[in-house]
Length: 119
Image 1 (spheres, one colour):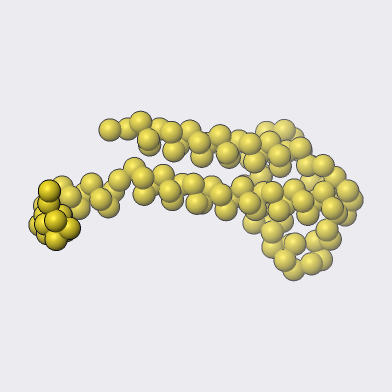
Image 2: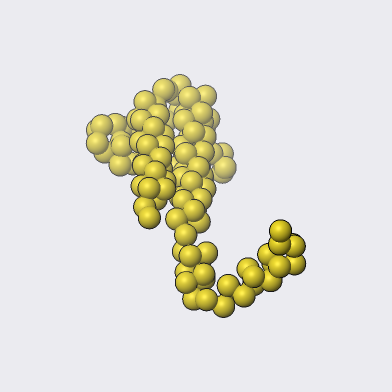
């Protein structure tokens, strides 16, 4: 049975091999984690937008206005596809934003699934 020192030593020796660096730095896991993190932020922004519109939070608030503007970038493609017009200052159930959340979740799932099955 190899000692812990032998395991660490053999692993450090393998770090000089260029293929080790390629395998470790450009692995699908790192890219997959990045996609999930960025996608999670996008979905969180869209969810916050949905709640702000649902509870009719005024766009005069600096934070709400910032979230509206940033999340519009991600919701706009769905708005255009559905010919949806944004309604402000009234209670509204933005179905287009909910569809955008589902679409982004499916895109994230597909991207990570494809990266997982690649050799």
